[in-house]
Every structure is written in structure tokens, then in C-alpha cells.
Image 1 (cartoon, rainbow, N blue to C red):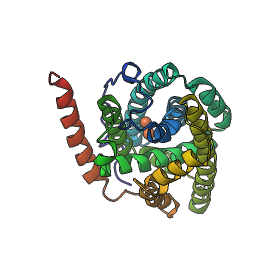
Image 2: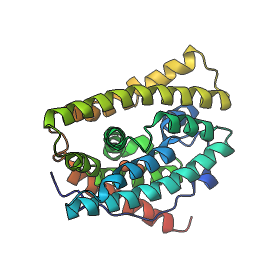
Image 3: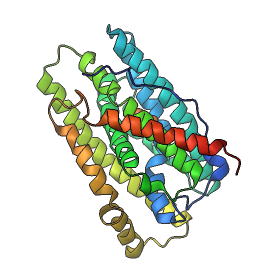
Image 4: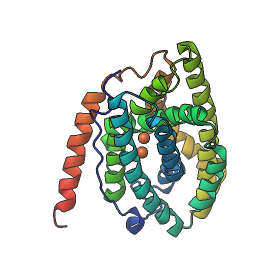
Length: 281
Ligand SMILES: [Fe+2]
Ligand SMILES: [Fe+2]
């Protein structure tokens, strides 16, 4: 497996989404914004859970490079949590209810007494965020019309998700060395199946609640437009699904092809966006 800590650079950046909160941040398209917000709203609770899951194994893993990877991972995710809390305060100001959504999510995630289950779930959700990040960095036009604060936050988040994509899987390989590889593989696949079903259900539920607050009638018209965004144009689902499916390959995690290129692209893009932020309006 490639060195899991080599590419991890925690960047203490602030995007102040709370100050720029806008229901139609995605180029004025409220429904398209909700498609992303219905997932984004769950990140603060999710990311705290991931950090706890990996930290649990930190002291037990002898490999110094993986330990460094966990530390870099935890720093990146802590900054993400802080910025997504600001994002959620922005949602609250728009009338959405991130608190009950996150309360429900807390009940869905395994408790601290189930470290291995938590690690499997973390690996699966990390792969979902990794897949979304690949889509964002591979298709900069998707967010070209977005409000700059949101666009910059998603570019930063996507880059760091790809930088730390190997850490959780490296921890999984070390966490229970006595476990036969086929059992670890099976656990990984089952956890991903559970996560996909539960997350899709939660995201749809969140989207439904957000649409009502945003004054969008919840009938077939809005759902078919939603489906069009997923399967038609821009077709988030198709862009996402192929990357997601790679997780089911036995041995997946021993290096993601194309990541170095994507990290270089992401770093250049982020540097460009940060330089733009410094220019007087
Ligand atoms: Fe993150
Ligand atoms: Fe992550």
C-alpha cells in the first residue's frame, strides 16, 4: 500500500459559509444546491465519528507511517468539521434543521463499544467522500457557477479527502492482523452495502425536508428534476457510481490509480482559488 501519510497536508482554511449562506448557492439552482446539502449536512457528526474510529487504533498500530497518517487525517478532518459546522449554521439561518438530522445520524452510527464495526463503516463512508471528491476535482465545471465561498470549500475538502484516502484502509489492514483476508473483504463489502442504503435513505429524507423549507412543492415534478440532476444532466450518479464500485474489488486500497494526478490538479486549483480570494474585489 502506498505510504498513507506522504500526501497529507492539513490546511487551516476558513470559508465562512455561515456569512455567505444561500439556499441557491449552486448557480441560483435551489434544487441542485439541496442535492449536495442533503449530504453535506451530515458531515460534522460523520467526521467526528471517523476521527474517533481511527484514533482508537492509533496506539495499537506499530507502523510509524500509519500513525503519522492517522494524525494527518485527524487534523484534516478536524478542520473539515469546523468548516462544515459553519456550513450547518448557515443552513440553520436558511430555516433548515441540521440539528435533528445530525441527532438521527448519531443514533445510526455504531457506538464506541464497537470499534471494528466503526472502522468498517468509516472506511465505507470515507470511500463515498473520496468518490464525490474525485467527481468534483475531475469536473471543475460542475461548480463553476457556485458562490465562491462554497466552491472554494468543496475544492479544498475534495483535495484533502483524496490526500488521505488510504489512511482508513491502511488502519483496517493493521487493526486485526489475525483476521483472514477474505473475512476482512467480506466485512468491507457488507459495511459498504449498509452505508449506501442507509445514506441514500437519509439523504433523500434530508432533501425532502429541505425542499419543504425552501418552498419547493414535494410532488413528482421536483423529484423528476432531482432524478434528472442525478441521472441526466449533469448526471452526478454516473460520474460517482463507477468510482464507488471500485471499492468492491478485492485488494482495493493498495493504491488508487490517478490519485497523484488528481492531487496535483487539486493543489493547483486550490492555489488559484486562494490567490483569487486575496485579490481586491
Ligand atoms: Fe472530510
Ligand atoms: Fe475524509
